[in-house]
Length: 132
Image (cartoon, rainbow, N blue to C red; front, side, top):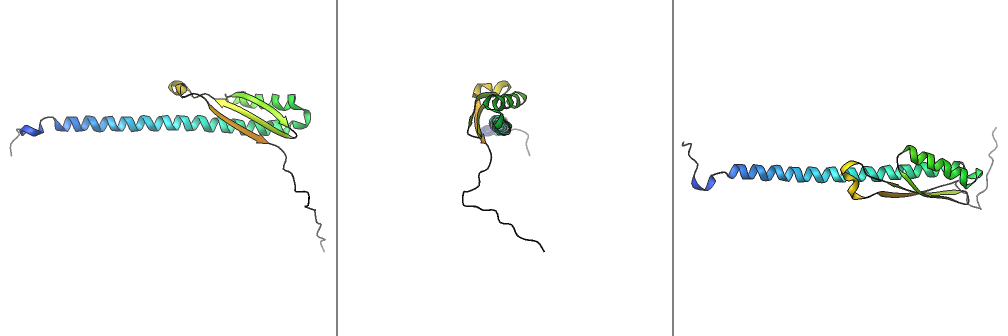
């Protein structure tokens, strides 16, 4: 065996190694971006859900109290309340969440939620079953 490379193989391993490392870095960067965007979206959705539930709990006290509670929940979760209002007993909330750090260039994630009491159909009657 000789230690001398043949004419066509000089530096080929270095080029392939560099290409492989570059491919791994590109895939890793894409995965980090997707995870950051997904995390921001989930944060916005969770904040909207919790804010709507909090507002619906105070709906009997009026929109000002209900939306005040929704605003407090949203502030605790570090997102922005875009709108809050009551439609009957239902609370409708819209929030936006900004990605952190370098991912802020992606723009905010928006989410909407609605919460309120469950209505029974009009034809449903309660039946009492006697016990012995």
